Image (tube, rainbow over all chains, first blue to last red):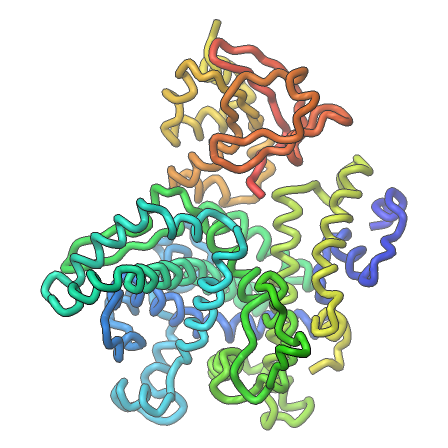
Length: 429
Length: 133
């Protein structure tokens, strides 16, 4: 750190302190034991529902497919509960989490009882006593909607190619081969069906993305429980290494119809986890998303909703957690899911602050916001590693390029809605 | 004159690159007449990548091939030919920034040995694996 500062004059950016911290290998989130405890606890609580999300996203993309009335799309069959995570368990391609490759035991327990009691799946579904899969679908929609405009990776452009249309056409015809009504509709409105398949390709994309993140978060929680992380930068660096380790994981969309696999997006396209899933995800979900329909109103005439999609800023990094903390809104659905799997130390922590358990959803939402600033820091550091220079580079020109990159990233948090300023303070809860 | 592949195989600094090119089934392509300009990372460059990166890529050949083809450009470009060029389009499709203002830099890698002539192209040896973006 001292060496770096002697080489470059201090930054004059509004967030100079944070930029200097990033240059010293730190995170946007201050390095305090309280922050470390909060973010690891919430990663664990996030990973359990995420274990449901990725399995169900793949189930919908691969099996439910174009079911006209998908009433049971959230009812995971045993095959998908047993599906082995490629990054956990004994048969992992690369073992990130030392635990099981099957569904997490806490998730299975919750699916059985919910918040109430053991009952048939349909009961839990209708009483909404279940994992809020709608949150995962909202994230998928954000990726799908912003995908056109972001120009990131090659995934979205491929969805417009003739090759993709041919592959989708084969699968659509096979899926409805015994359903003349749907085949007739397909003939009349081919674009509508194609657009549904494109959306399903994003289900697959996000499922494959989260399949990696769940074991990463579980492992971080285990390391923390063993006393393994010394501070927030350690937790961030674990994420940076994870991003690199899995960067080359294929992103694809396969559909299974009558036991036959239809490769709508084959693995051979060379699409990767980093370029076609992780980076678009961070941009679409952490930064952009869209205004949530809920109690908070946005006035478009007062330009509270930007004219261009690239300027959207409704993601977790900008969210005012309190007003969006209303039932049925995607972030609240996630908060509710995480509430069921909080580690005891985090529950104890929330009981001591604000209104204790009465506003626990808001408190954990703000913890989640802190934790996602740390994930975004990991992405920023990973991009710096991949595209720029080491932090201890001896060439001042290289250090200047790193500085410019960090400053550009911080520019995105200058707007008043950004919570970067707030997460610097421990009393923000 | 030897081909790009012959030169790489005969040099002890390119063991990882040769193994990767062969795993990705790109040997024949790089033996073809081309011509190509290859930015060839050394073993030390590959070793800088965090643990697991290469393992995952070796398990997924199309993805490995994509990263490798980002290091190859169609045409024969010696250092002197690049004086007025800011970027080249790789076989992968993404641009590679070139900077000759202070030494010879290719994206965030430095060329440590330039202009190795092969029968079917030119090799520039670089000290980092370069990535798209």
